[in-house]
Length: 162
Length: 103
Image (cartoon, rainbow over all chains, first blue to last red; front, side, top):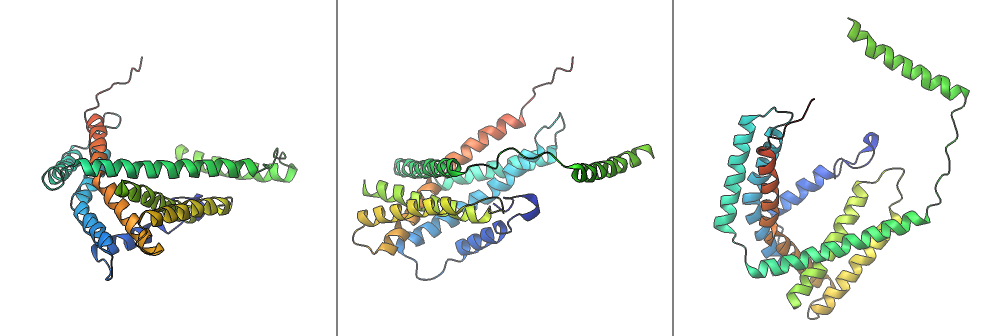
């Protein structure tokens, strides 16, 4: 989310939102409903395996073979963390039938929302008339773009010749 | 059945909230998010209304809080399956020995 939008104006909301969410998970406010307290406890319990799993996944992905080059230190460290997370899940969080049924319900809810959102996107785009065919560059614009390209090409050729 | 529907509508509310936050965070000058925000708000309000019908003993706001909390618990409940899926993908990547034929 922090990297959405064009590169010249990317949103800076992602990291603060993540930090606020993490802080509220670790230090929940007072006056929560019973269901909210349960959700808060569940999130804290999930963090115990999710944190090592996430770090492990990133380490394994970056240490895995890319063009025959493997970073074994990252790979071994990553798999150690991933296996630790798996052990933690196995010991503390066995899957139950109720969890799976409610999980299916949650997945259905997500699916329905995404389908409705995609239909809304399609409808919104159908309303747009479009901008038509772009006009070709005029003489001044051609000169300007040529000057920029020449400048960049001469800069690229410079260091290679040295 | 009541729990199933509470989680279902709670997840719709939660997902709509996530879409609205995403539209705000992903805003850029060449994008008009207003129709999508309106549609997401409509979906979210429908979800809140439906969950308030199921939990009729609670107020409108409390039924939303309860259903969203229950949906978070349900999503976390199946998160080990997501772990397992990523585990399998990374295991395949780690032992990948496919070679490129350069001839």
